[in-house]
Length: 147
Image 1 (cartoon, one colour):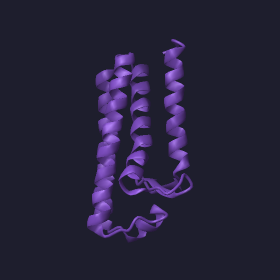
Image 2: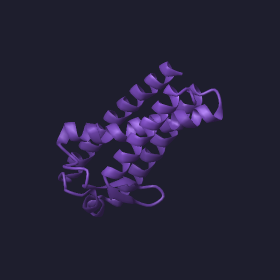
Image 3: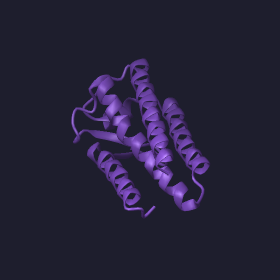
Image 4: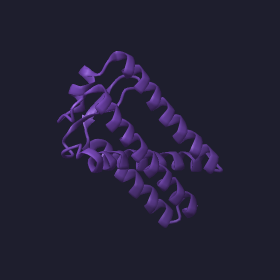
């Protein structure tokens, strides 16, 4: 299981960077500045592209589910692998954006976390905290031989 967790973490990191790069290019193409809050950018985002962005989000979740189903042998293991990979993807998405464009400026920065089914808006510390706790919890459960 350790090898699978390591590979899934790498997959999550790669996906995070890939999505970070997409967001950087998308902002540049649409002429959106790097604001203090993505809540403001949501108002400027063309509706047509907002719908396209929602399909990208759905595809991301589908990819995370598929990789968990392919690597897990039981439904419990698949759920753990999904949460593990999701947490790495979500946490390192923000790390990638910070490395690429120095955004978010801090953990209190407001972001649009998801668009499906409607925009989820919260400070960056919330997904970073949840993802970090997920990774730590799963790692501890593994080390304690509970999973």
